[in-house]
Image 1: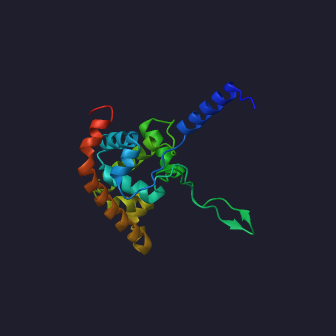
Image 2: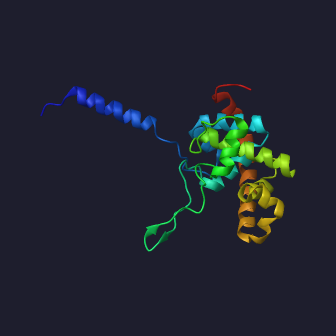
Image 3: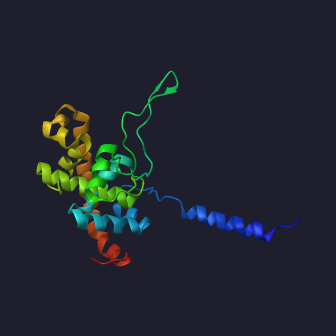
Length: 203
């Protein structure tokens, strides 16, 4: 059987193109160093966001981990009635699970209308922006992962009203985010120096 060399070459190039378009999804989310070594562009994105907004990388990464476990296209489950899909209860989407109103406020405030919620660099910049606004409006420290997550989940108005006090499960999740942020922060102390040398664009 004669193999068409042009067809083989086309197939190989197509395969390389598809692999290049694949979205990075870390398999090990308990170690932030392994996450960043798997995709050093993510570290550079996180570092830029931290410098711009003043929120520690560990806090931002812990929030994203809780919201999506670093998956790009996550949406809330769609309920059904008699096997008929119903509208989703939330417009949350992407790495940061940002909802439409907050995302639109972010784009308006930063002037970047082309940002995408399923792009990591945009998502972590959103988390940095959101935590910065939380600090400015509510006086919550950018280092306080526990309170920052409560405000992130409940919104600024909900946090001000103390809506989280009626949600014991949310309190537990916020405590989990606090622990994760502390873990990520400790891990980064051991690998950030090497990561800094591996990425482009020194600050």
